[in-house]
Image 1: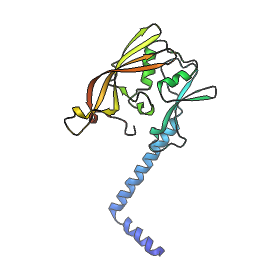
Image 2: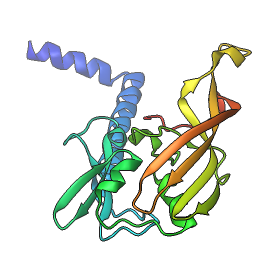
Image 3: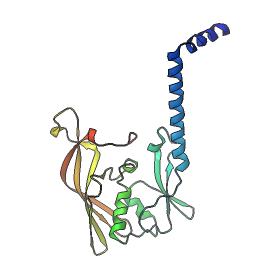
Image 4: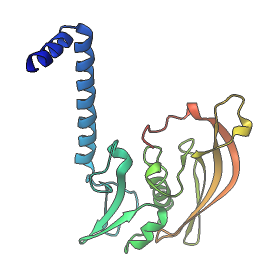
Length: 207
């Protein structure tokens, strides 16, 4: 029995095609493990948030513990201060962090962009969109309130009515966002301003 099994594998090994495919599969598996482990190893690197943190330190952490594959889809933003840890899954969660202050137009823009980066927007429950095109924001200040007008693309929403082919078209809205110094956030979609072919938008594969 043992001899027959060995003969079977010897037969496969003598075939160049089998050897080549086996080596490719091993290389792919090793690469995936290496990439995932790199993400896990770097998950606690501090994140520069662009506004007054009040002593809070921000980092990506795997949730639930152990995560899954790909590991990037299981990263959650965490804030930590004096042993207290708070998950940040939407803009309003910032208000739970005592000491946070947003005091300028640049800081208000950094605040909203924290949740609308093209590479990480899918890790948050709100607004589930990213700035498109980048750099289109206009910020004004009224009293202690910052008002931001910009265009956001919502990858999970599409309009098949405007499609001239079976492909869907993603919706781009003009959005009004208001931000208070403590992180209170309100957004209002004003109007649809564009439709973008989904194949023309390079989204993260694991979003």
